[in-house]
Image (cartoon, rainbow, N blue to C red; front, side):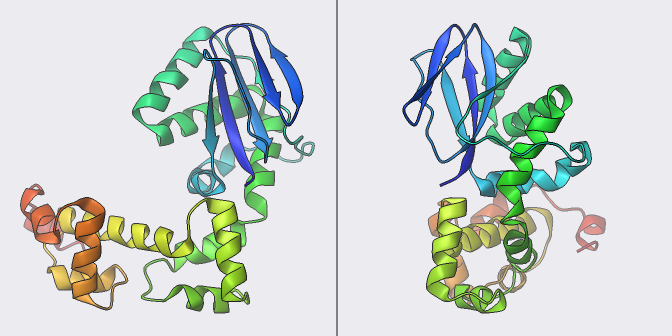
Length: 239
């Protein structure tokens, strides 16, 4: 599966990809896109980022991308100049909040080596943008996976294969997780009835919603509602 690798090293190292070796001098930040898996010593860390994760931040970062530029070189690590403070911050964020680390590193790389970083991002997301936009826009519709495949003009088997290859999870699993996360947000921030939350989140069967919610969060919808801060009346009227 093609993905982006964010590589952090703390000392001299050697990155090996698909039988090729690339020396790294001192603490470094590297980016690599492709299907290869980078191998490092015990002091280095590589963080794979799927197309799905990139799509979620790409929308917010498009204004940072310079126009034009060269094509991306695949399976070849690119050293991005970075001070040790930047590397330390990236490493700490990776342990605490992966999404925050991704946004930090990409913003930094676009500022320092914008042309190359933009080429990598465009390569990774361009082929999947229409598919992802459609699914994301209609993720709360109470549709089976076959409905999405039909709308995109793809056989169900091909659609499932493409989705799994690109995003690392099945379409069914991704849609279920998206709907449940949305439902949890409604339970925590509104006073809507559980049955209304289920319907708004794409579940046509309230019993199926409750069972899926309990398996995913290890809590029932009612438990989440009870533990949520009290929703002011004025705020609840906004929904």
